[in-house]
Image (tube, rainbow, N blue to C red):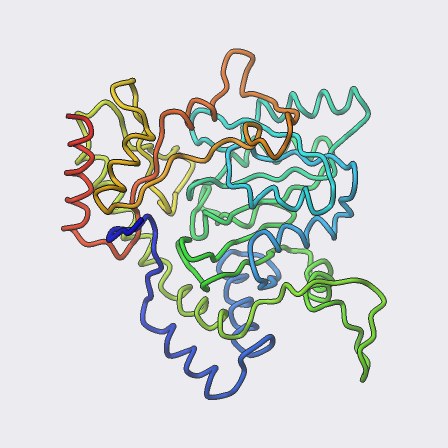
Length: 376
């Protein structure tokens, strides 16, 4: 389907092309080069961690962390349920067992109450998870003041999937700095892009160095090709890193624009049977995507998405929870409470609206006009 208003298209700040041309002129194309080192160093400094590793995708980043943590066949991983499947795919790669944790009503991120119950049951059964994978969803951080103490109490490492939350804050601290390990995604629709790519971030320099070794096919430092371990072709190219460096320099402006857009949506859509999801007091979201929650049954979210698409406007439903995905074959799932499954409700009521920071005022007004037509 052809769109002229996209959900979250790439938006260049100006320096990206200059850096790419410099990479071409120096002939540092791939897989090594000075822009990779600069991008890693500047992103680690921006997030506030000791080290970073630029790789081919956010999913590859999670996979490397799984390898470091020794997650293998039959091992349990507690995972955010309300997310994109890329967060959970490494569970398949290592034949581990996912246990999905519902989201909380306020932030739509992992529910601390459900997480605590999952840990209590795991302790009783003598089958503790090897890791907890927590997603900072749609640009807003999880409730780290509640989640981290629970995980520390049970001595289980935390992987923070901050793929959608680059630049977001929780109580003044940047997303990507809370877990034992964190990951970014720089896919084409993320707030910053390298066309395709991701990153592992951590204070554990030894772990990052080992993952760097694995990400380049685990080649030993010898004159010939020597391999004592298996590795992966996961390293980011110097060209992609050059784009990422330019994007990082433009990030704060991108966040400012998206926050302004969030306010515009919230004001312009007052009066319809729904609302734009607000952010919790603890969070400074990067406003990656704006979500419209439809409060009654006057029109199905899928119908709104289809009408917008027919008008040339890209929109999509909220994430379908992982425990509802056929590929997982009835996995274990912990709802927010015995009386409330939050993410199923959000999935059945919410849609993602165009939120790219390159959108014009005219395009925004057109989206509002088409939305209001959907509600009569």
